Length: 192
Image (cartoon, rainbow, N blue to C red; front, side):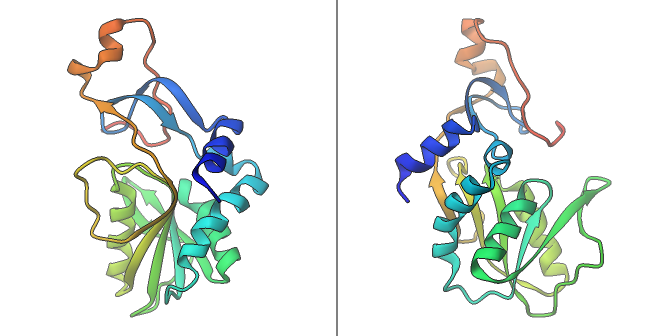
């Protein structure tokens, strides 16, 4: 799969948006990727994640763990394609936890699956949960890697596409200075 095809899927599904966005970090951006709009189309999810699965199929993993919400469908589809069990973590009182009777065996080699990685916050929270069960995180897989400049997760990242999307501090945001486009908060995570 090539970059143009992935971008076309993101645009066709209305997942790639341009405008003026308030990110969970408090920063502003001129573009946003809402992967849930891709994942509502199973054929797109399968196609995009086929590329990620190809990168991960030779990894020595026992389990795939996706943080809810965005990682639930992604972990399932990756698990289906590479024939590995897939479970998810979820937030309870602002803390990521493993619930629903899910278990991670001691020494289990685990791949974290996300829809999009931006700051790495949910990836690192999920890593902490996995390690609390004595699991070993071998990497993070995602549909879209838009990890900000200078942010290091200390993990290999396997993605269908990498996107560099500019972000701005609110007081230096050029979109705010123009004043022509309203600010929208699109994500699912609440602001700090």
